[in-house]
Amino acid sequence: MIMCKNKTLTSKRVFSGAGLGIVYIPAISAVSFYFDQKISMAAGIAASGVGVGNFLFPAFIRFLVNTYDWKQSFLILSATSLHICVLGALIRPVKRLEIKKDQPILDITPFKKKSYIVLCINVFLFCCGSSTLYVHLTALAETSGINADNSAMLISGLGIANLVSRFGYGVVADWPSVNSIVLYGLSFFLTGLTICILPFVNSYALLMVCAVVFGLLSGCFGTLLVKILIRLLGLQRFSNGYGCLLLFMAAGQLLGAFLAGRFWIWLIRIYYSLF
Image (cartoon, rainbow, N blue to C red; front, top):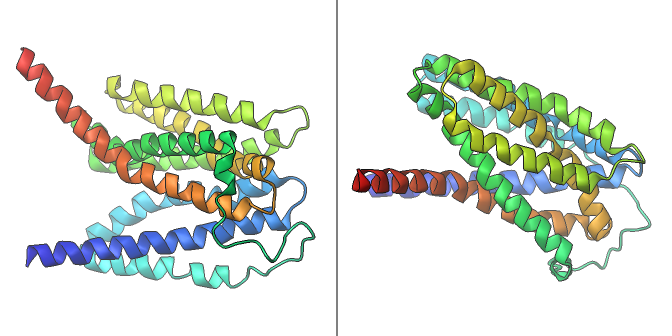
C-alpha cells in the first residue's frame, strides 16, 4: 500500500514538472520573439514572477497548511496554478523574418558550440547550488534555534531581493558598454561564495543578509540568460536551445539538494570515525 502511494506521488511529481517545463519554454521564447530591443529588461520583467512567488508563497503555503490539511492545500495550489492556462491563452504568435518554419523539432546543432556546452554546465551547477539553498535554508535556520515562521521569511526576503535585482539587471545589461557575459559570470561567482558562507552562519540577521545577497545576485539568471543565449545561438535556434538548457536546469534541481544532503552525512560519518 505504501509502495503504491509512493508510485502515485512520484507520477504526479513527474506530470507536474513536465507541465511546468512545457509552460516555461514558450513563455520565455515569446519574450525573445516580441522584443528586438531592451531584451534584457523584457526578460527581467517576464521572469520577475519568480521573485514575487518566492516572496508570497512561503507565507501563503504555511497559512494553507495551518488552516487546512495537506490534501486541501495541494488542491488550492493546483487551482492557483491552473490560471497559467488563462494567461497563456493571451500569448499570440508573431511574424519574424528570422524564423524559418522548416526548423526541425529536435535540433542538436547548439551542442556543436563549445560556448553552449559551457553554458549548460554552468546552468546545471547553478541549479544544484540554488536547489540546495531553497530546500535546506529553512532547515538550517530551524537547527540554529529560529522558529518556523521566521525561517520561512528567509525565502520571502530572498524573493523580494530577486524581484528587485531582475529589474536592475535588465536595466544595466541593456547599456551598450556592459558585457552581459562578464556580468553574468561575475554574478554567479559571488553567488557561489554566498552559498559557501551559509553553513558558518547561525544568527537570523546574518542568514537574512545571505538570503538577500543571494536573491540579488541570482537575479541575473532569468534576466541575462535570454540575451546571452540569443547571442550564442541566434533567434532561430533560441527556443530549441533554451529547451535543451532546461534539461540541465531540471537535472541540477533534482540532484542538488539530494547530493548536498548525502555529502553532509558523509562528512559527519568521517568526523565520528576520526574522533
